[in-house]
Length: 225
Image 1 (cartoon, rainbow, N blue to C red):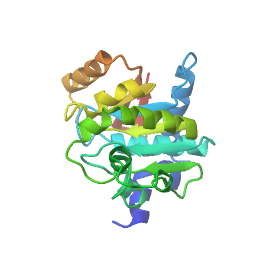
Image 2: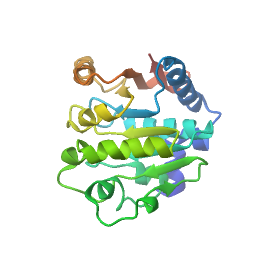
Image 3: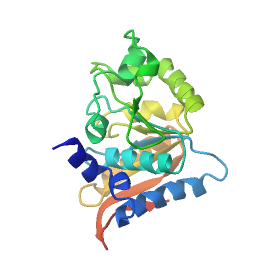
Image 4: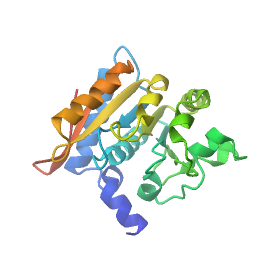
C-alpha cells in the first residue's frame, strides 16, 4: 500500500476532514477539552486491552485534530513492540524514542519528523530494543516527557495494549490522562474491565473510552466519558 493510500485509510481527519468519522474525532478532542475544566490534559496516553483495537489510528487522528486546532502537537509512538506510526505517516522509524532513551549518539533535535499537517510532529519508536519496558519505566523517560511538555502544547502517546504487556502502565506516572480504546466487534467486556482496573491501580486520570467499529449512520468512532 502506498503512502497516500495508507494516509487516506487511517488519517481520515487529514484526508477527509468533513466526513462523519472525522467529525467524531473532533468531538473526541472537544470532549477531552471540556472534561479538563479542573485539569488540563496536555499529555495523553492512548491504549487498549488487546491488539487490533484501533488505538494507533485513534492516536494519530486525535493528534491531527489537536494540530489542526493550532496546538503544537507531538505524537509519540511508544509501542516499541509493534510500532505503526511510521507506516501511517510514511516516515522512517529506525531512529526515534528508543534512541533518545539509550543515548545512541543521536541529535535529539533531528529525531522529530515533520508531517504534511501543520503543527504536527512525530517521534517514532526508534531502533528495536530487547527491553522496552525498562526503557519506558526509566527516569530518563520521565525527564523526556517533561522536556516534551515544554516544547509542545499537546502530547499524544500511543502505547502497547495493556493485556499484552505492562508498557502502558509504567508510563502512567508521567502523563496527565489516559484514553482506552475498545473495539465493538472484538473487545470482551471482561477484557475491558481488567484493562480499566489495571489503569485505576496506577491512579492515572482515565479521561474516557473510545468505542470503535460501531456501525451506525456511517460513524465508526464514538466517544464516551
